Length: 151
Image (cartoon, rainbow, N blue to C red; front, side, top):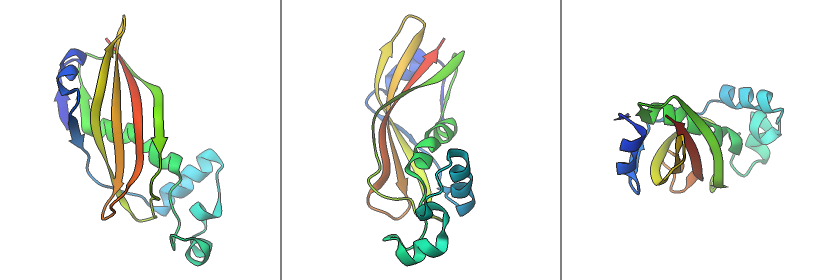
């Protein structure tokens, strides 16, 4: 974990990979919980037998939005920023899912601080976030994520 004292200190990381998180296993239970929360029960996510028979992956896979939703969890593990009253997920500029996350895979995140923009009461950071699965050559998710830090 990187400990940063203030939003202004964050600026020194601009253009750099800041950190890589630890691995997180994606279980079928997590996939089912996400399916229940989003009401997306497509068989490729929740039916292991059918996925084994009919899916090109040979098993169930995590929802792309499940992978994307892990950004907040990984950020909490990766970066501790002091001097912030509130942090807001401001949105995403671009999101792609180049490869599937198979059940049982272990994933982690890489954070690169692309840019910083000063606002009247906040600092807006744009991160390049890459989620990768252990042992694969292609990322599972690549996105530009905007986070606003209010002082």
